[in-house]
Image (cartoon, rainbow, N blue to C red; front, side, top):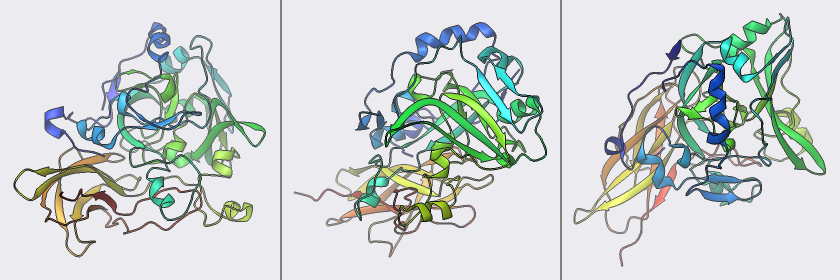
Length: 399
């Protein structure tokens, strides 16, 4: 049985051309995994803008994001902390242990045979998206992302909650840890990437499967760079919680001790051990938006402006309005949402606005259904996470 838990109409290129930032699942038979090796072998680098070569990190040109509500794999940003592992799907096992009644070790076929296949449409965004805007104020470490470290895909797999129930959850359980297979060299040490989420989020199936163990992206097996053969997808949370190349799930009474939850992906003014220990891990992404394209309409003094907006990542919170300004926020002009509006997903928007000669920049801000609007500028933090100030497009001056 296949269930589409966030069913929505697709937008074609004509419907949403130039706009910037539900799939149908098939029941897996064991032989389905024979398809993976060929599909996952080649890196999906295409025309991405490379931000670091080793490890490979890249994002699409912003003008590519408007080409559809669902981001094609070739236009989806790639985030790696180390070199991607090579995994034999036939030998692969997923371990579930910790505060469970029985530990499990499942092959890919066993995993899907024991659980119902579901699909979710969700936006994944890196916590460092738009980091270059922090760096313009003060140097920050990390991948120098523009506003393209974001994308929306149709993810297909099995509910994490259902898998955990197969193992049996003990009363003391409060968190679910994820561990990947990538090996990361840092400061003379080798680490694996991982993290955790609260158990309440893992079990959040109130109206849909929120957290899934995904093996397909946009109807096809995951590519190597997007986590083949299995990854977590945690809608509403920063991309670091959607762990790729998943190898192990541990149920615990405390958050993960993995470096990427315990010592980084936290908002701190100074990156000292004391500040990091006192800060809490980042889970949900913030309300945000960006202009991906702004083109003049010949002979009119107007611009067609397009972009994406994303509401803060918890259930029921959605974008309610998007506004543009050409005078630093003194006056605002509304944009129109031209895509589906749903939990845990971006919307695409468009506007035609007057842009008088001499205008230096167009800026955008979004407001969510809880009344939270983007600030004019984000407070600086030492690791450059969660920039969500008004996004600017610099207007080219007339010759």
